[in-house]
Amino acid sequence: MRRLLLPLLLLAVACPSDAPPDPTPAPADDDDAADDDDAVEEAPLAATTYTESTAPILNPERGWYGWSSLRGTDWYAGGRERGWTLYFADVELPEFRDAPISAERLTDMEVAFANARSAGVKLIVRFNYTTSVDGVESRDDAPIARILEHIEQVAPVVEANRDVVALVQAGFIGAWGEWHGSTNGNDTPEARAAVVDALATALPDVQLAVRTPGFKEELFGGPLEDEDGFQGTAASRVGHHNDCFLASDTDVGTYPEDAIQEGKDFVAAEGRFVSVGGETCGVYAPRSQCASALAEMEALHWTYLHELWHPDVVQGWRDEGCFDEITDRLGYRFVLEEARVAEWVEPGETLRVELDLRNDGFAAPFSTRPVELHLGDVVLPFEVDPRRWGPGPISLEATFELPADLPEGETDVFLALPDARSPTIAEYAIRFAVEEGWDPVRGRQALGTVDVRPGG
Image 1 (cartoon, one colour):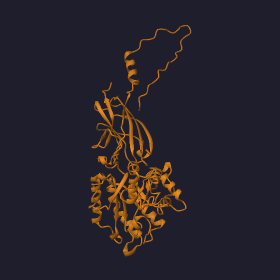
Image 2: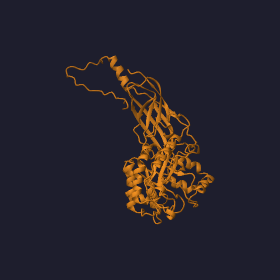
Image 3: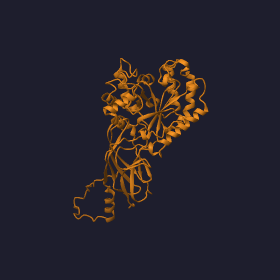
């Protein structure tokens, strides 16, 4: 707790009427006076200000993404060089419509996850059986019983590589796993609910996503209210992926023709708590141009977007000049403005820290993530939830109880937002968009120094 300045209270003492009080004050005890001075003393705060970076910041679980197939031959190493921290993993399983997934294919998935981890990227995973909408030449999806069997098989692989998984799109049903065009009668509320329930149960803390707000409403009602967000329930973990963003008035059926704005309002409300992303699928001017694109990404809290599709739309954003702004604002972009840290502290006492920052992005992070204060190698939990750091200014104040055996001397102070499951992977830590103070080895931001003094 912060040490408070205590006011001196004057106590009135009753005296007998025939004995007036002695006007001479008693001498103060020197030791008591010293103790009083020590008790009220509080270290001043030293401020560090930061220069905002104008460069793209490669941060986890946000931004542009590339394409892969979750195979061991996928090459993820070039992703960060292209500005990607995400890949879409399009896991096609047509050869297993009538059989369990082979051990070889499951092992191949494991290799792909390991390769992605080594490259410092994460994956948006979707399983499907067909990329055809007409079902010809056996280009069908699978019966629901087979789908549920396959979910049981892949869930342990996904869970074992949870640190590499940004989210899982519900998939499995219909063409591209987008829940339409099923040739096995799976385009029903019952089948869709069975898939989401199986995924949510088998992957209890994984973020999921469905293709339209109508599907989310069908499954859970909604939209999510403030008290519903980040509760760990299935409803609070199912987000939205729009794979025909800006391609027509309805985004090619993403929204009902008679309730377009209602559908967007639904996604906008939920985008404060869950992931929103996807891809474009064709030019539809002026809706697919910069002004409309930026306005909708901001309103709906977009976090991730496919850079390679649709190429004409993305090239249009480059030509119009909004590509760089989209690059910066997809998901979160935290700018640290000022840090104030107590100049000195004693071991076993409390350290005071204040931070001013802002989020210039379209959204907040959607995954659970710790926030830590580092004093050298001592790690102290910062009791805040960065999923609540939505767009706009953010002010934080906290005091930290220090260990009694804290080493004395001038000590560097850092702020870290590591990955919850792979805290030692620096590429998975959130970086602030500032020029100064980033530690690329430990994945943490310098806040200043504090002099750890010997106790009284």
